[in-house]
Length: 204
Image 1 (cartoon, one colour):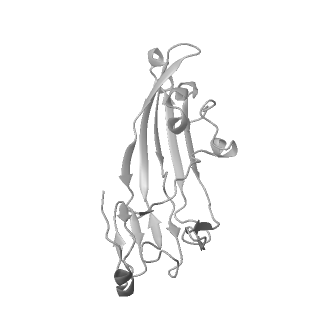
Image 2 (cartoon, one colour):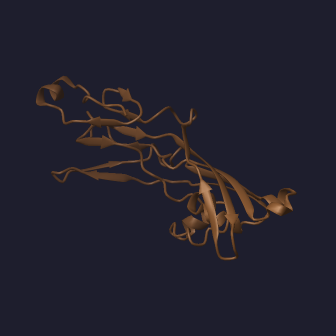
Image 3 (cartoon, one colour):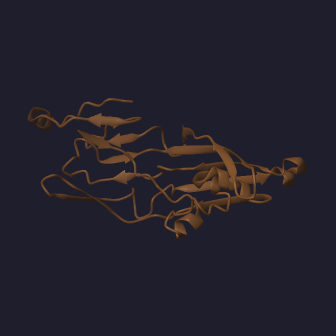
């Protein structure tokens, strides 16, 4: 069984990226919306955090026989680059002092915003030569400070495909055919390979 999917992009905040993504316990800026919703209660006033990552390099896949195939992220620099945006507000800062224990926030990020691309003459070119998951995660969040040492938080994950990034998961094979959403494929028979057919797929 062969599966094609986009790579998950873990760093969703500049401080977290600088700490190897070990940020949940600290989470003292608006990116707490992503890492630890309860910790949003320690973010004072009204704050906003925006960022993106310029990512480049190469990727490699090794077959069972040991053959290495090199690919990239669609170019020297991944485009559009994965990004994140967060806005938080303590309700006291919005003129509601009796609700000073409540902090609300909204985050938008692209957890899978990376295109992966492999050579058209690679060993699995009849299955896939590129894959992308142009997904946006929208995260409304609310946090409540119970005591000086205890807070609770609730966050929802609303996923939507971004029209400016594409539509659904795109898996393109050597013949240029594309499938959307998710695709699972079985190995091709020798007859199918001679005819240059794409493997059968299942959309989920």
